[in-house]
Image 1 (cartoon, rainbow, N blue to C red):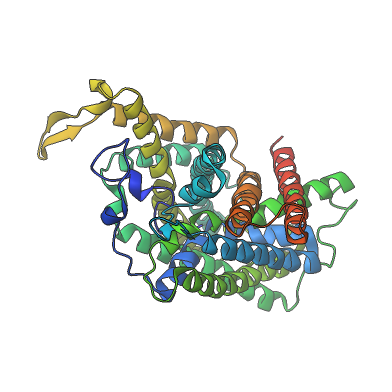
Image 2 (image 1 turned 45 degrees about the vertical axis):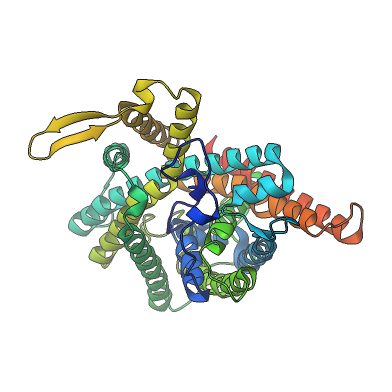
Length: 466
């Protein structure tokens, strides 16, 4: 996932007035977004690290089921987006239509505070898990650069074995430093760099897959995917299929930022109309790109498709291009980690400040004189909290350094509640759909089927780790 901004930083909670208070519409930033800015936001938010696992996912499912599953997830995500787009505005008989600034705001308005709490919990778990996943992915990519140079120097049969733990520690140290930067969300150029890096390594992976197919002169793979009995047992095949579902779900992770993006749009035309058009265009672009990457990666390697297309070393030459692609991944994830963890930093700081408003350690800054830099204001609680959170994601990454499995878990956790359950629930309340009506019943059946998919994907990914 490439990332444009911190999706869960509530504008109302991020004002300078008070950490524990909200602001009104008058304090909101100007809405100047258009169809094309919304499309750019979505494409940038979707295409990213998840694309690297798609070739492996198609290899588990085969030539028919693999592309079909990607199209199904794309269709579900698009439908969910349409439902959410209609939930941005809510009617109020006294003040007229009102806006929901964030996904969680919308859940609070339509479904109540208790479900909003559960929504926030799922979102923060997903953000934290993404920090873990990005630590793993960045470390694997940095290790891949070293392995690529080793293979180029000593040959493909040389045992170029390097540990990723050193690179995880280096990545963690970098994030500890970056996490102390105040107003990180104002560094707008970070999003541009992340977008460029994301498209660069995704395009390189696609190009190398196409080149490999041309080199072989044929397409590898089969209709049923990776073989049962000769390569895997039937049980292993089933678990891998479940895990592949989670990996593909992870590749479409933008439902929970739909309302945040819609809140940037100017009107007229109506925001929900513009958002639906932008979603349709974006999903068509990303799905085409995903199909190309996943299918050409599978065609290039068949059953040997690596879990991470650019670090599995089916590609050896040109080694400098492999190095560049993995460097792009690492640079992208350095910034993307901050985008996902900044809301966690802010949440902890707000919570502790509201609980203990008079505690000097939590709420007061101290001025420290730094040579060549002059006096710098430091909040020691912020320093401690952010460092501890980064250290925890680094430690978990070192304990469970499994790229595909972690992506599968995150995809499973994110898919049903944030893409299916809450959007449908809000849409039912907004449109006053009666219980046990035909439409309500179809919604419940569809939601239950998607829940089973999420549970299966979660089970498969956890089994892979175990």
